[in-house]
Image (cartoon, rainbow, N blue to C red; front, side, top):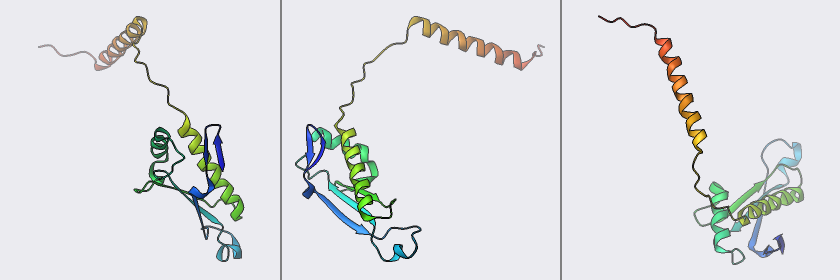
Length: 140
């Protein structure tokens, strides 16, 4: 089990790991060892996630979620497969922790009377400055 917080844990069998060759520099090692990690997590098919967390996770992950609802996380910044695996898992847990946070509801507010008066006074000053730039007009 991968513990996200006190209320959510993901069974390890819901994660699908695959290893591919990493792009970029690495010397002779890069052509022989599959160190890059591709982590797949089926967001829509996961029985572990509550519906509201699932919806927030899909929205947060954006283009990393496929049409089928599978979250793809790639890690290839380290030279060892194990460290890339840890990096991918850390990204998944960070995304899930962020999705667990329920957004605070927005309460509509109105600007204070003083703020409205200051804004209108600033607009009047700006208009005066622009009018003075125009220069005198010919009146025939």
